[in-house]
Amino acid sequence: MWAGDRCRRRKRESWHAGPRGQAALELLAALPLLVAVGLLAWQLVAALGAAQEATERARAGALRASGDGRTLTIERAVRVPSFLPGARGLTVTARSAVRAP
Image (tube, rainbow, N blue to C red; front, side):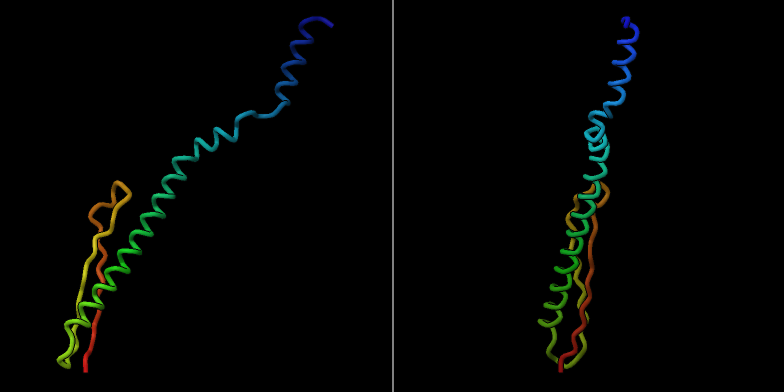
């Protein structure tokens, strides 16, 4: 056996060893996407929390103001905390109507 055969065999063996570090590179490539999905999910949670708070404020305001036998509609707006660069200035509005006897 001469040196050329040994070199070719070594190249073949290293090629059959499989991709090394491929999973780590794929994770690094997917990391920005995973971060973006996490931020979107957190923004959705913040928007739902603000909607719940706006609903509670509208109901409380309508119940507090009612009492003279008429239907009263109260509207309240709550600012949504933003975690994404383009999500500043979002508000959630809730409306509640109460008819007091």
